[in-house]
Amino acid sequence: MSEPIAFSAATEAKIAELLGRYPRKQGALIPTLYLAQDEFGWLKPEVLQLVADRLELTLSAVLATAMFYTMLHKKPVGRFHVQICTNISCYLLGSDALMEIAQQALGIAPGESTPDGVFTLESVQCLCACDRAPTLQINKEDHFKVTPSELKALLETLKTEGVKLGPPVGWLAEQHHAHAAHA
Ligand code: FES
Image (cartoon, rainbow, N blue to C red; front, side, top):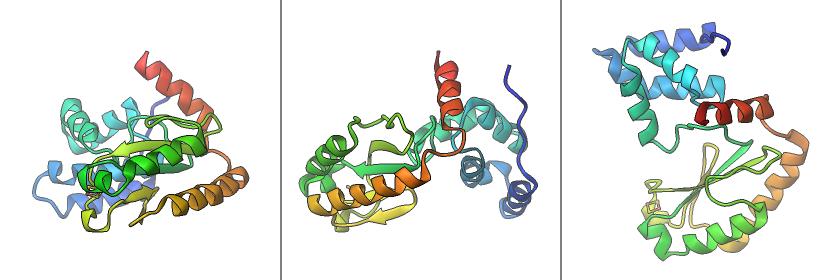
């Protein structure tokens, strides 16, 4: 049985402010999910339930929205979340080469995290910057017209930074939690 969870007072205040902007609570669902993700790291089942309770929605409605957006994390993510767009414009301009480089540099496949919790790699669909393809996003930062050598250099820099920063807080516990939730 997992511990009951609650939003911090700061997040609660932001949710209350959001709710004031929408005529229906459902309108605040996506921004509330982002706030929940910022607070808890990823959208584990009890976080989805917390959001459902707070917005008086069904769990299935909250889950359906969470599943639709790749930016909403349904499992723990590492310190650096590397999302490479592999949709058509990016694909035509070399996203497969970028993905290959990332896989080799990090030693993981799309959808996986490095065991030290520093990187999570993902293939994502259009990042809405097709005119600046190939694109990728690392955490909330966009990178446009990325060349293979730029990506190599970027990952090397982040690896060095990752050695200093380590994984996100509670990485191992969250991994166990995620495995238990999917078992
Ligand atoms: S196809 Fe990659 S940003 Fe649109």
